[in-house]
Image (cartoon, rainbow, N blue to C red):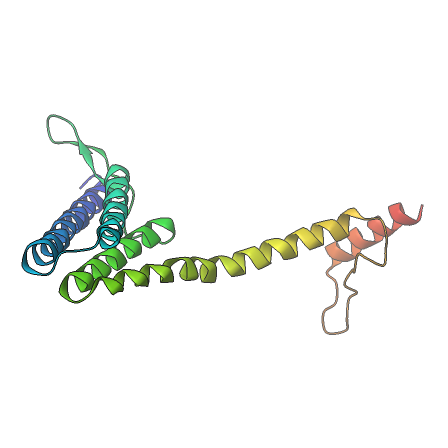
Length: 183
């Protein structure tokens, strides 16, 4: 069967996107029903928070749909598989944010709009994830600066130890480097 993996991925993406659509509509319908019709009216600030939550979730759903929805020709043949929605990275974070938004909207619909304060966790999580990358980048920048200076004291070169002897290639490169630096 030709393109079986692509067809499987296209079907998987269609299922995930349909689930996201149903979940998004359901959660927002429940919020509108419970908070606008059955419970006490919302403040303007609470309405803005809901618009932010529903809007950001809807925007991410639209972006994921554009990237991952399979496309077919008029005969039903698969033209474009779409991006894998189960891959790690930004796609995973977008889906997690959508789930988080749905949970916050649902809890706010059932209990109190104070659950919208959970959105303060998002920048904390971003900082938690970005800190190791930032630290690694600063370390690389410091190494680059040390290599750029001609001061031998600032550029620390590792000397071979008895527990870690140099390979023949490394020894040859070290001798060649010393030859050019001393001459």
